Length: 216
Figure 1 (tube, rainbow, N blue to C red):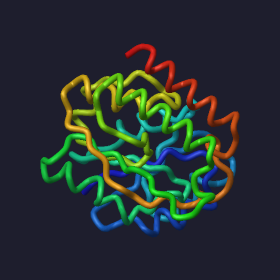
Figure 2: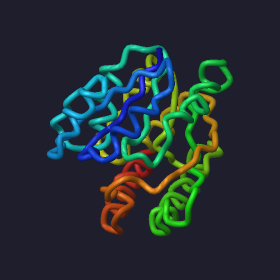
Figure 3: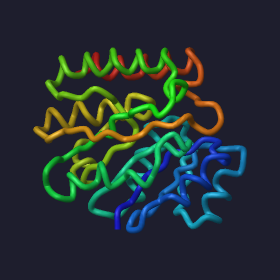
Figure 4: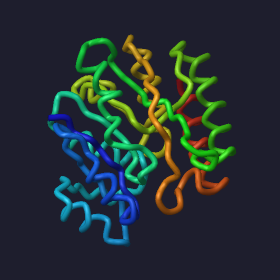
């Protein structure tokens, strides 16, 4: 069994599609981060493990899910239907085979509007800076990723905001992990994104990640 951590804030519209497409052998852990649209109830009704994390923050939700997980390999992905759970084996496979320690899903948009230009540009800038800082040849800081749970806990990630995914890669690289990418399809998300849906949200996420880079 592989645990899949799904940070969730008002994703009632997307959760049915996401949870119904979870592949065999993958257990969804929905971490509710203060939803007001019934997301927590919907996730429970669809058979997911539900964890409540009252402290707001993407990293806080991810870390709560990591602590609740019990499988050797753990995955992370957004709960907004922008990523297809059926493609999780693309990131878990290399980890399970011992070919990589951390695999990131490199997003490949299926439509022009799936990845807004301002968000794509911000991601590219951060990825380029990450390559220069750590030497890890990644082109996307995508939210679908997989690694071994014990190893990730050992990295002792401290960020609890949008810098969490970036800190994960930085600390993994510093620890000598083999970090690779696998292409995954990227769809228009259900509902409005808290990050890419607005320039303000994107800038907030970029600011959190820059703060993490400044400490590297």
